[in-house]
Amino acid sequence: MSLPNHLAIIMDGNGRWAQSLGKRRLFGHIKGVGRVREVVKTAAKLNISFLTLYAFSMENWMRPKEEVKLLMNLLIKFLKKETRELNRQNIRLQSIGDTSYLPEEAQTALALAIDSTKGNSGMVLTLALSYGSRQEITQAIRQIIIDHKNGGNSIEEIDEAFVNNYLQTAGMPDPDLIIRTSGEYRLSNFLLWQAAYAEIVIIEKAWPDFVAEDLVRALEEYSSRERRFGKTSAQVCEQSGQGDIRELN
Ligand code: IPE
Ligand code: IPE
Ligand code: MG
Image 1 (cartoon, helix red, strand yellow):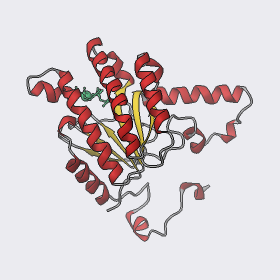
Image 2 (image 1 turned 90 degrees about the vertical axis):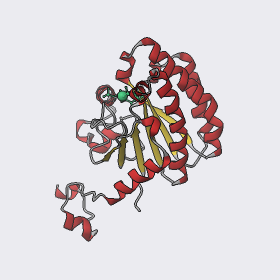
Image 3 (image 1 turned 45 degrees about the vertical axis):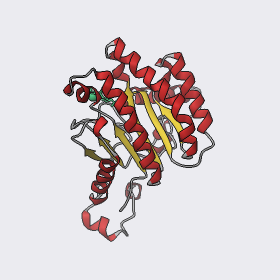
Image 4 (image 1 turned 90 degrees about the horizontal axis):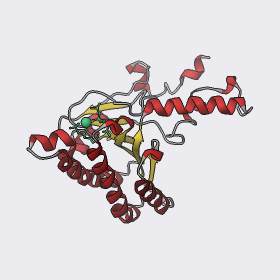
């Protein structure tokens, strides 16, 4: 079975899951944290190199104040509680997104967890927090122009790899597989540039119901896909067709 090098997950459906049980949305978020723990563990065991979890989008700041507050408190708790476990599993934590929006306590807990796990050599766990892909790309454009004005780069230099380096995911491979739970067929501002050739698997279950076996099933589905990257199936099967687009120039 061919596993993704970089797996990204849009953890969706906590609120509706709780509401369908007659409970408050918070209940779903609490359950959801448990699933994060399980999925991180499973992915690390499977030797996946990069796991990226969409935990809070830029647009999620528009949710009711109480829900945002509760989510932030859950984040703080998670970071404080899980750091030891991440170290035990040799996982390196990092984040993408504009974390300057996070409450100070969350920023501190995040910085501490990142620092504490920075020496780990196993799976890289990236939390997308206060993350929006359009904002990320906009920020990259700004920085490229600033650097250009300061004489740091020439326009001719700007190619895909160059742009990649200005994104928050610089140094990370593109996601090979994006899983979204709760049956929604959209990216919701997640890794838009990076997802150019990602395989997408939509799971009908809500995130609080997503267990290790669901992850394994999604990985099997991924493994059965033929990734053509614009080529023909015959070329892909030959495997000799290793050429890339730059050879055309
Ligand atoms: C995902 O579940 C968690 C976050 C976005 C923070 P939701 O809270 O979006 O749950 P639904 O989609 O409204 O059910
Ligand atoms: C995407 O879910 C963000 C996260 C899972 C963190 P949303 O629930 O915010 O997405 P929409 O609003 O349904 O597109
Ligand atoms: Mg949602």
